[in-house]
Image 1 (cartoon, helix red, strand yellow):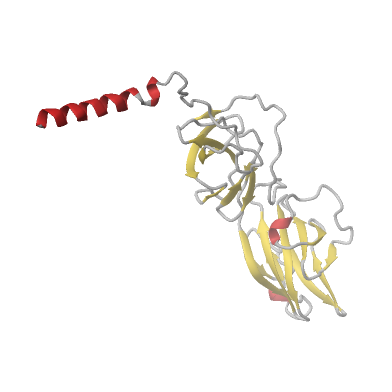
Image 2 (image 1 turned 45 degrees about the vertical axis):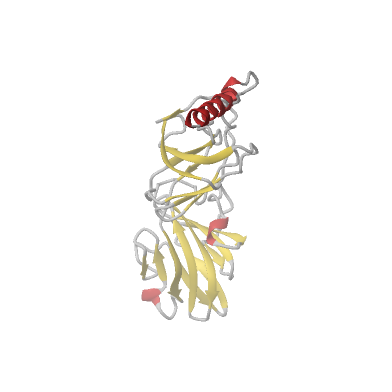
Length: 268
């Protein structure tokens, strides 16, 4: 009886092996990687960069790898993986420019090429709910220095912008060696991607309006932006961001598509 049971078990094993896929002449091994992700976008903040992209259309995509480099054509180092189309680089440093790329991989660990979008970010400091006061009444607390992150007197050498209540009309003022421009109403401080090329105020001031964002070109060739949150007779409250890299007009970048999509880049 035992011999009969053993024979039956052996026969089942043999039949199972014969029915396996690797004996099937039509069995296909998947070694085709997904396509590179597209729509890469970044949002640079204070020592942090948010990275997003479009989900791949392939139904066997298991996840995405995120890479960075200090040059678009340079060596790319993986910083993390995710199953979603979103990743946050908490290791970014203010004042440093990073190029980002994303790959997709499937359940067989086939990985795509790096994404082709030219996407870079230069994180910068930012602040929220900062108040300065009317320089006519509170001259010692009416100016703001972006480089010092401090409230300063309006006539201080470090003052980049100051607040004025002129007969009930509110102004943001700058000195002769600095420029300012009203960029209009925005939803948040992040809505203005780059400093403008022209259109600066010839009078060196701008009417302050709640919800408007203003770009400031400082005397030492740095760009900043502030978004007004509230105004009273004696003070203005705003959010701000300041680019540490001299001459860098990037306040919040958008992705650009590289026309040289066949350019090979390296991962490491």
